[in-house]
Amino acid sequence: MGLLINATEPYSLYPPNVVPMVNREVIGIVTQIDRPGANPAQAEVWLRLAGCTEVFHVCAKTGQGLNQILDFLSKA
Image (cartoon, rainbow, N blue to C red):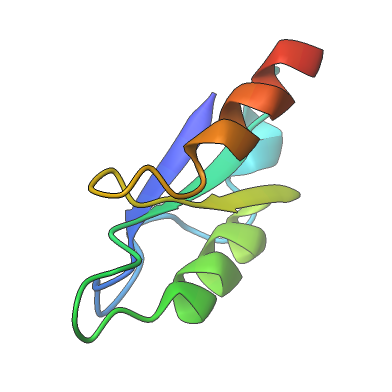
């Protein structure tokens, strides 16, 4: 399962410690890391507060970070 958050969001909709409520491993995915005004570090903090231990930063436009997610999922 994955929680997505846009790196340009001013706040997170995910409450702290929401991940322990599910019985699957949950990864965090920070999207749109290349956008002006993006703050991927803040988005990662929010995902970690939600309970994600693995967080990936991706850009669909350039493909950055997609291989890391695929590698992680192939080992799971």
